[in-house]
Image (cartoon, rainbow, N blue to C red):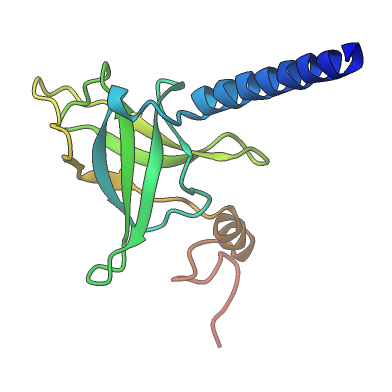
Length: 158
């Protein structure tokens, strides 16, 4: 009988610790905190490296998360929905862009605030966007000596 009671208590302790870890992980991932946020939208030419759950940062501080990505069949742009913290008011003339943490780092969405006194309302759209820049394309342009529209210096065209 004593062994059964000890086994039940040990099992309950393991379940309590597992539940604690689950709640901690959910809070860290921003799950369940949707009431403390509001949605904004933006349309990008390219969202390479961005997925649902990607951090949205302002001045290097996480202020939101990407919650939805869809292809707009009319414009062929990627429409993104982001969830911003309620305590962060984004001016209407702000810019949103896709940035990289470095050559080998991950990708995040960066908000650069504008100077307007008016703030975007929930569901508003950030119109000034800059999509992802492909490192491979940049290296190809560098290796070919330019953007491909003119021959490199010292070369001749056939």
